[in-house]
Length: 325
Image (cartoon, rainbow, N blue to C red; front, side, top):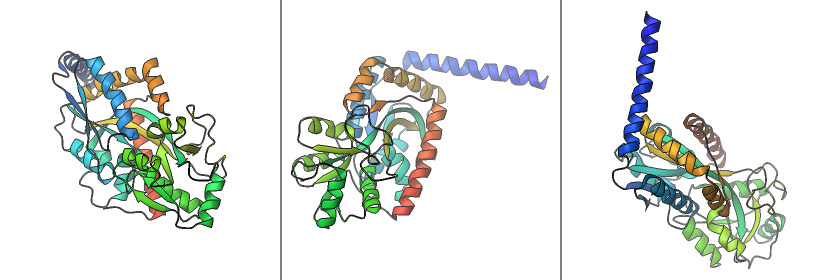
């Protein structure tokens, strides 16, 4: 009898979920949806968010408005999403920086990303790319290391802000190679890349999307990617390990999150629609053009991935001794 009741209860729950998804499908979204980008315009998160927002708008027949909220390594925009009503009308494009790194880097965060945000869907991943200004007389990672050792403290590396992946990757590079290069933080990847292109800094570990046009146009020189294998979009660029820095590996990812109390049926609907977008040839090509690869996972797989990534970066932050507040 008890077993039968449990079966009936499970069936009713499944029907309720299906009904709710159907209702959401008919009425959601009834007004514009805000997609928070926790970084300045022009960076990798901004470019990836705009690609997705446009297609979500086309798919739902309603505007998905990009809202750039830069500052504190992505924490300001992320906090705005955490505090938003859990009604599906505020989402955030999270990434390695603010989701995986910041909880270990910032000692005074007012939220916990693993507790206060609901994973909706992974969107894409990319290597970071070591790029240098053409004025640098270096055409390989080995030459960068040799020059930095010959001129300690004279070479600057830009980042999207203190504690971001672009910053910590530079710190890992310093630690792995023993070079003395000076960190110059900016309020987002866009401003950092603009200053690098202008020659105010000499090098940067950047996500691929914001630097690809400048690499292709000859205004920046790409020397290596940070993933374990070469990027499909940058086949001619060696990995850091191939370039001689053994064991050096960093992957940057983006994904959509909602406030944690958002209804599961609405999260499931968004997950389904985003995954369908990411499987279209148009989106795959658009993401690849930015030097990244579109990705899909189940909600459960994405949640497990985020937990594992946060644990990995917690160890990296501990080893580096980096802190930001």
